[in-house]
Length: 133
Image 1 (cartoon, rainbow, N blue to C red):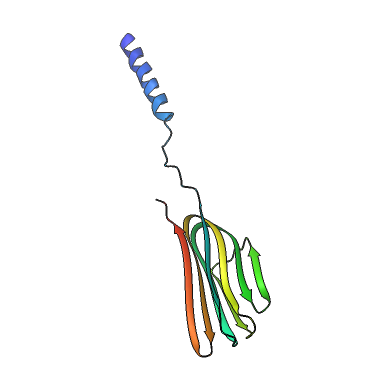
Image 2: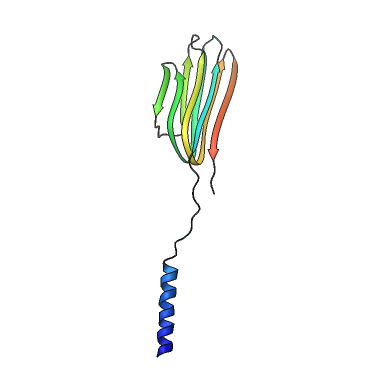
């Protein structure tokens, strides 16, 4: 009888010990603060501009800013991606660019710009990422 009680007691202790174990998880790194931008001062001719903002993975985009035919535009906490914008900018607007701020946990944000002016095309891009296992 004592042997049965000892086996029962040990079994109960093992069950409690196993069931109380928490699964160990690796701590996640802090989100990376990303500021991506492409910017240029262009010629004094009329230009067509194409901007793109592309995201993937786990991130929060805090803002997207760009120059348009209506001036400097800021979108706070945008949610629709990819973002694609096209403008024809007048000759007196020489600042052209797209900018984005994001907190990237496990992903990537990219901004791209293509400018066509006086028969020439120039493209630029910038990206920021953080990949966690």
